[in-house]
View 1: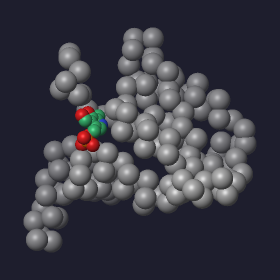
View 2: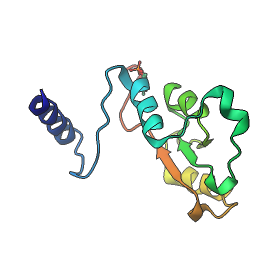
View 3: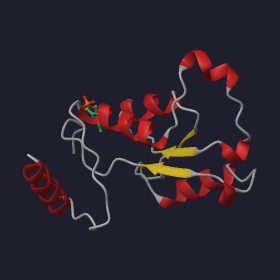
View 4: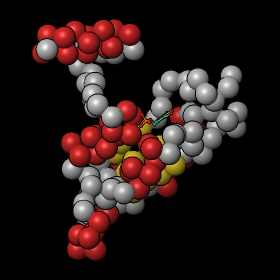
Amino acid sequence: MTNAYHEAQRIIKKHVNAHPDDIIINAGSGMTGVVNKLIRILGLRVAEQLRPLVHLSEELTPVVFISHIEHHSNQTSWLETIAEVVVLDAEPDGTVGTTSLAIALETVQEPAIEDRLLFCLFKCYRNPHAGS
Ligand SMILES: Cc1ncc(COP(=O)(O)O)c(C=O)c1O
């Protein structure tokens, strides 16, 4: 089983042109399960009833940047964490791009952005249900 697992990982990495150091997170319950597994690995979710007791300074509050075209599972899952979620605006042509990321980074200048934990989570495939 372990060999089959590693072989599957190797095939997926090759298929998506991943770097050998890139990590694939597997879960048995689809994309939402993977996002939530990543949140758990990062330790960013606090039980809802304990939320009022958790007071993070701004520099300890991670920032998650997502694009305007994320599936809601890659938005609402992060809204349930201790992170600040920033949704990037669309580029003038409607795409996801570095201009809107640069603008969003400027909105998170205080406290110094280099002191904060940042995550950029963008979908990088074409949704076959989204049309051309
Ligand atoms: C981009 C994207 N993310 C997440 C999901 C949710 O996936 P799942 O049902 O596997 O959790 C979908 C479902 O279509 C999707 O297209």
